[in-house]
Every structure is written in structure tokens, then in C-alpha cells.
Length: 175
Length: 162
Image (cartoon, rainbow over all chains, first blue to last red; front, side):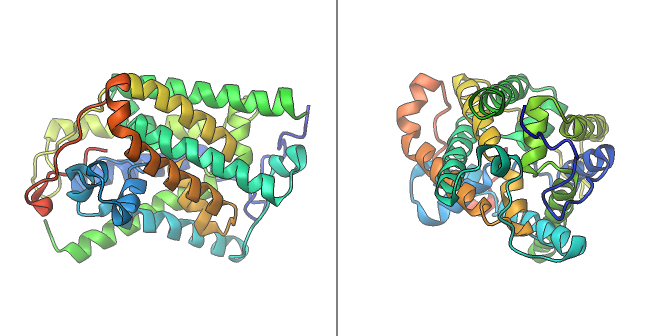
């Protein structure tokens, strides 16, 4: 069994993590404020369609759900990036980070393998979330909270696939 | 809607709070995501579960009043279940495992200065573009809805559904 981060610290400056209930509370509160203040349903994966819509004229990317949404997701996305910047800056200073935790100690590939591995994973995320019409936010937080059948199925599928993939990688192939 | 500028600032601030919580809680951390799938670290189950409980309770309250702060009627369009939901989520789950990031944390990790998140971002954008390019061919086999035609007045369109 490889070292599975039993010290329970973040890659970011080796911080101890925020209390899970506090973090969950913030995520829930933001989701509710988005709906109450702006009549907007939380969902992050469609943000990448806004990015594609900047360069593509395909009907899929120019449909009203994207082009007619006023571009709110791009502002929310800017906030997500700033949240990361602020978190790093307050934790001990912003600096480029190349550590990938267990991947570096167990899989221990070079920069080329790391880049290809992460790009490949990103392909699956982009293609998969848009095929499924949602991700951990739109299906996972909003859809589950709203007891939507599609979201219950989606969460079962992506949690199951993640469980199988990680266990194959870290308990079978690389160990 | 109130002034566009105020609305944009609000979206940025809400995103910032969301992103900060993702960053500090471990929800955007490669090791914490692997720990969740290995069942050696239960932090992320707590975060997602906590978020769902808070949101579910709040949704009940908001549905009872049925109005936003500005008095607009709250519209929630439930997502549609089709074969794409199953296949897409399976692909996404594998991608989440490979990268330790879901779509929100990709952006948060970029903000934190994690250089390798650029490779994930490039992959996500390429994957999204590929789905858009293949949508017509996937529509029948995956049971996906037809693409809505571009609206006549894009600015007056209803709020986004996802």
C-alpha cells in the first residue's frame, strides 16, 4: 500500500483543511444566494461552453442557454480563480506549485507523462460533464438537493467511476 | 435586473467565497480526492453532504416563498435523465479521479498557482469543444434533447438552466 496522504494536509502550503461542515455550509449558502439574489441555478461545467462560445459559431455553443445567459458564469468563474489566489496569498504567499501529492510519490512520472495524464483526464471531464449536462455542482450539489432523478443517477455514476479508477490506479497498477 | 455592474460584482464575490471554500477544504486537492475514492479520507463526503443538506433545506424555504429577493418568480428546471447522463457521468468520474479536480476546482487550482491545472484546463476545453462538435451524432444514440435555436433576443432570454 503506497503512502495515501495519511497526514491529512493540503498540497497548498501543507495546510490543515478547513472544517468540512463549515466548507459544506459555505458551498450551500452560495448556492442558495445565487438562486435567491439572481434566480440562477448553480452549475460550473457549462462555463467551459461559454469559453468555447467565444471562438465557435456552432449551434451547440450559440444556443440560448449559453449565449442568452448574460455571461454570468464567466464572472462566477473569475471569482473561483480569485478565491484560489486569495487562499494561497493568505496561507503564506502566492507562488507557482508543481506538486501533485500522491501522483508524484507513487506514479512518479516525468513532466511529459504528468501533462498528458492531466490533459487526458481533462478531456474526460469536459466531454463527460457536458454529455451528462452537469458536474459535481449542478448535479451533485443543486440537483441532489432538489431530489432530481437525473442528478441522483449522475452522482452514483461519477462517484462509482471515480472509485473504480482511483482504486485501479493506486491499489492495482501502481503500488 | 438591477445594474449590470452590481450583478457582475455579486457573481464574482459569490464565486470567490465558493472558490475559497473549495481551496481550503480539500475539495480541490488531488490527495483529498484520491482519499475519498480510496475510502481513506472522509473529508469530501462531509463537504458534499453538508452542502447538499444546507441547500436542500434552503430550497424548501425558497420554494415555499417562490420569489427571489427582487420579487421575481423562482424558476428551477430539473435536469433531464437520458443515456448521456449515465455515459457522461462515468467518463467524468474517471476524469475526476485522474486529475483530482472537477470543473470548479480546475479554476480554483489555477488561482492557487498550481501550474499543472493548465493541462487539465486545456483538456476540459478540448473535451467540451469535442462534445459540441459531436452533439448531432450523439443526439439519437444518447437520447439527448435537440439544440434550442439561437434566440431572437439573446439578452431577454430566461435564466440559465445549468
